[in-house]
Length: 377
Image (tube, rainbow, N blue to C red):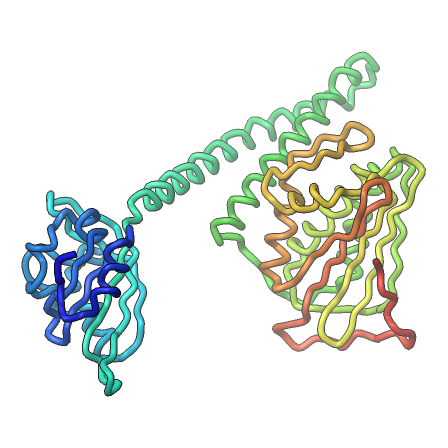
């Protein structure tokens, strides 16, 4: 191997085998090493680059506002001056005249006295990932337009179907009722798609306020009293810690409870119970939702909180599931810095354990029970 610099040959040999681009600058920002990866990514040969200063000629960095960095804001210069590693995403000028987005890591190198003598920069072509990111943004944009465009006619369909359903003619009602059910299902899917998109993009709006957790939980139970009665499922609420207040968004909190209760009803057989337990300690509130349903295998538990991550189980009464509910739950729980875990096995029911920490504003302290908490397994 040809000698690139004063660096030991074994080190330059290893750097030369990397697919990432690697080059080394001295304190004057003169290029003293240029590996094969740098040649492939930039289009500039080693012979052309060795001995040149990084700020002159072909090697130029730009930020995403097309501002040249090499004169006033050189990454390598900053790394050497401050003695710290720096990571940035910038544009690199290719030999053929186009710009390449690269993720670059710059680290100062010290001599035997501990003085910074060089900087090593490792850069990776992320053109592919930038394209994927652009396509993802465009996909989200189109999804948002599509969801909003679908919501408008669905609202009209539901409105007219609701009016027709008031007709005393039993034959008309028999036609209208399935329209209402399907329109409601489609509307729910649109809402979940928009929610999932907002959460994923970090644009979900939270209205944080003092929330009575028991009241929100009771409201969610009330929301599903109808579907539970249809399957003769009893929803039992046990409040072990009364008067629990916390800083949260009541609507998003209710959304979490709604999805968990709906999921429990979907996968529970008729004539069973769903037990909900509310308790709190000094740092967090715990909500446990335990059903007597079909259970979840270990393999399926890994899919639970993924988008469209349907399990092999089927709802016990043919209910429709689009695989977004628990995904939204997990994302919202993460927003509240909480945790959610599942304890289950096939055929023996499922328990979801939700823990949300107290934080933010000054709240009324919950009245803790005298007896110790009951551990669930």
